[in-house]
Amino acid sequence: MLKKAGIVVATAAAGVLALAPLAFATGTDDRGDGTSISVEDRSVERNQVNQCSFEQDATATGLLGPILSLPSQSQQGNCVNVGDGSTYRPPPPPGPGPGPGPGGESEIVYSSIPDDLPVQVPSLGFQATGTSEFGDHVGLESGAGSVLESVEVVLVSWACESGNWVSDNCVTTPGATFDHPITVNVYAVENSGAVPAPGPLLASRTEVSSIPYRPSADPVNCIGANAGQWFDPSDSTCHDGFVHRVTIDFTGTTVLPAEVIWTVAFNTTTFGPNPIGPQPCFTSPDNCDYNWLNVGAETFPGAPFAGTDINPDAAFLDSDYAPTYCDGGAGGTGFLRYDSAPGCWSGNIPLGEITARTG
Image (cartoon, rainbow, N blue to C red):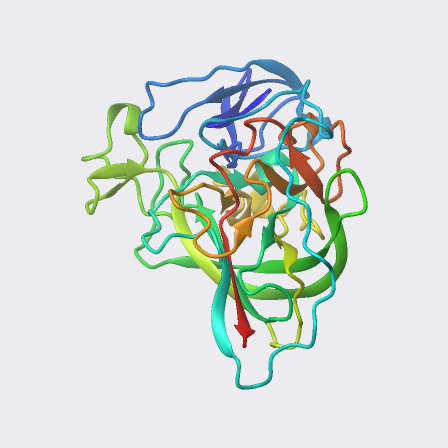
């Protein structure tokens, strides 16, 4: 069972190796063939610990680095994907008409991102959970016919310029960043089956983003259970990750239907559309920067702030690791599909915002 509210760590004979924050995060890779996986809460209130031990063959799964778990989200291996009692709203009549003319106005047609986004949010670690693509099925406030202009996503960086969050020795020069390609995809929705599925790819764009390293560990303000975290004086709180908003600009020619599936994708060492493969950083104590990169997922009060989340207890996920799914992989693994089970994604919708030209 994967509890999306803590951090998955791998315990080997040589010591503790983090798979990633947020079973959702990433860790080092010095593991043997048989490892014991546990889930623990690395949030600010670290006295709340969820232990879920089970045996895993690290060689078979290739899961490495921190896994950040989404708070209050659990994935039960005995859940089913179809007919699970979750709510699904039927789609509106199909058929987007012609897009607006050049004089149309730019409008946020969907958003789950609040204006006052916190410095850290629950997030899904791609390397840690075997994930390649992650997103949501949403309804656009404009209805059919608007023209796509941009998609914004929230990433969470657990990477340090040197050291790592697992060893509590993170050191980062203020303002230091690393570059990594981030892809946003927008799909039409296929509603002919029992659950929605990705339809034709309407738009896709990859841009290299400069992603900040998380700040250095604060040995003065973050001690004891918070050791290794960085300190935010604005809220007097210690944190592990650091949020970063990435906006992907599109050409403004894709006419959108009333509902779409938006996703974010990027490559890590062993996962993604085109896995990078082992690099020298992969065997270093610090691991590779991109293996510590997560995608934010949290349901804020009043969200979504524009448009609709078709099923707030569902997401679209492509993972090679069956336990990452709410149904334990019963619906298949290794391709982008609908994922839902009662209470599984509630409170943790993927954070994204779509801007389009309307009118």
